[in-house]
Image (spheres, rainbow, N blue to C red):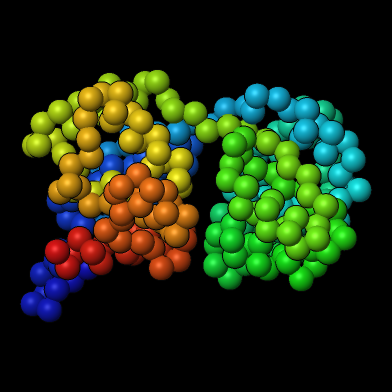
Length: 266
């Protein structure tokens, strides 16, 4: 327990704060644990759940000819997990020639498969990954494993850089139907409002707004909007809800640090 200058227990930076977590259920625990450790009360209402893509055809074809690709790029840990699960269904042991990832969580997922990450950007965004890969793009065959209907940022940049790009949807983000009643109850009365809401992807932002719209509600202006990084912040601005804060590093740790500093100073 932190100790104050007078020898007594120091107040935790998020003591008494109620924080809404919008991540998928299987990914929410790390953020919830970190917030709880700083004194906050996490409110878990997932605005996304992970499901299979409309078709596995592109991913199956890519897995069957994986050695033909010079590099495989993963844009999320979910993409890695879905890639691994589909390979297991097909009875394949994937061994890409080279692997690129968007950030540390994705890298850890790759390493959990016993594979090595060859390329990672210093800033954890699709734009930064594209810039990192551009020097080796001309003439190279690259496979992008990502979410269905994901932004074409990485694909467009690599094609413009001369790469031959194949896109394979490994999973899709859906809005959990069970979350509508929870969102409705949370925002029904001002006394229920959270102090802040965390957004860890563009999908969590768009899907929360869709749930609020379905409930006939809006996000109160008094609720602090905390973004994990520039892509999520852009999505919030496009929704007319610019973030009050953005993590300096696009990680869960960075998001918690930024949120703690913002709320503790308020």
